[in-house]
Image (cartoon, rainbow, N blue to C red; front, top):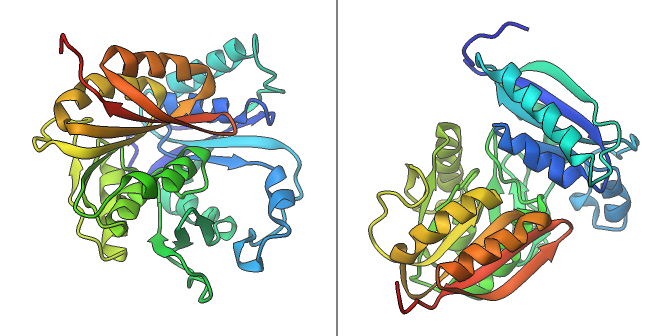
Length: 315
């Protein structure tokens, strides 16, 4: 495989694994720089078979192999990242059954990846929201807040447990006229959800692909959300009522001290994207920064926290 500058070409990295390890493998793919992660979970068809027909995958999933695929830009250092991934998988084998851990590689053009998975992405009700792919018409009978979405190469279809946790809890913390920062916005799904609940929203991502995709999805949903290129809370001046951070545990930990100066009194951080074995570190980071965790949410192997900044005497 030729190691040239990306130019819309990606390496698809597919790891064969187990149900117990697939979430962690997805996190390892993200850590090595993959711009998007797709889970092949054979349990999905069984779980959804009794759901309304419009919410089912377009075709049954007959293959019973658990796989996680990530998409890495074809740049000169991509091979080093794959080697690091293989090493990390073997390290995980010491405490988690990862199965064969076989890594398959193939080269894809961006348009191939962006379209191949669409047959499996169907409308889905999550909390009060109905997430519908932009290329499909939403079910006419659903009484829900509609969100139209085309994630492209950005993270955030609504199907991943971390995003689902956020969508389910957002209505309990977002109020009309709240100022909300969505950090690491990905496809923009959580920013759009907050805006549709009446908030004033600002979305940030350091990935230029995500910035473009999120802006397109905001326009598709007719919500006025500035989407900025930036690193976490840098250059955001006005204190917010809510900061959403559906990222990785390590990045959440980096964001927490910054959030102290970027929240109104009683402001809240909604932190997700936290694999369960790293949850204690995130919890400690909140406590050390003077936050009080008011809600802990769990789905599969993932944890989300709602934390209020209560202030510290030495802050």
